[in-house]
Image (cartoon, rainbow, N blue to C red; front, side, top):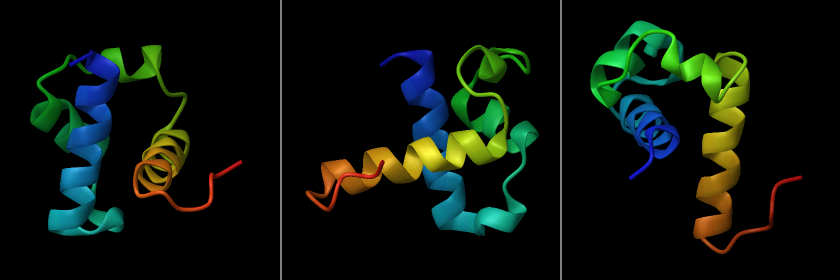
Length: 67
């Protein structure tokens, strides 16, 4: 799996376990086993990351593609 996918899966797992408001970048770094700067290579901020996680989840479930 790529680091981007590791970050997205860690985010999805943490949202499921703790709720969106409790998820921090520090928790994501730890769960995904990536350095603190790595996330910014793929996502500008938490909102962009969560939107990508949501979009990909919807597409995989066969729902309406997010735009």
